[in-house]
Length: 372
Image (cartoon, rainbow, N blue to C red):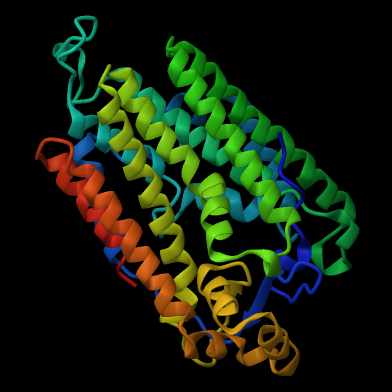
């Protein structure tokens, strides 16, 4: 169930020539307020802020104990600390995105007229309780994998990371707390009493495991654009796409509605990941620190355009100006075009649902991924 332990070299932004994952460069980007505003406006439509999990889970004794033990990691470089901080304050509004999209799609689709089992009066703010539960389950699964991905490879531990016993303790907490969240998600999933929904979300968990395994085990050098899209869908898109489809299933919508919801989730996820990958390239400024991955979409396009031989020459010659080299070719513009393509496909998919405030919010979110 666990992804491969995170490499310390990758996590801290150094060059890892074994995996060719990340480089640390002196540039950065200013975070745009567009995404935050779109998310904030959308949250008002579904009734309340869709934070990463339900209050029942947040207030449980088990999670309180986890939070108490995580304090012991203060002063170390263990990534579980950063994950925990993100739950409390996340200025980029990325953690709650999946649950929010599920709720907005549920409201945009409305009740199905094909089923007599579900009554409109059962809905709260235009959303069935089971669909709200699904949104929470989706966030629980996403959060569990975030925590599990914080496991550190202790073979690469150094004194600067913190005491070894604290790093070992952090790994244990990452495993146990991630398992706790995933167990709660699975319990909630079973309580939905819908076999097809269980099948969909279970397959999404399998996709996540497979995608993260590919990311951890495959060299970035061997990834072309088609492979990048496939891997990114598994690790970043499958959960949202299948959760959107499951939300339609819970309301007994037909296959076409389920298909369009799936496509919206898929293309929005890919567009969102492309937007994230592009940030260091479209908003970088000399003299400031940033990180970018050697498996980021602009780098994948760049490497495919110039060929492996020239790519290796650029790596060996001047590693500090690799960001400028990628920007000078068509890798960035190609990634921008692909981001716009997925945004447009998401917009096309959402047109299948009736015009409403919720649909407008979904359109705004799909458009926002093309703002850099």
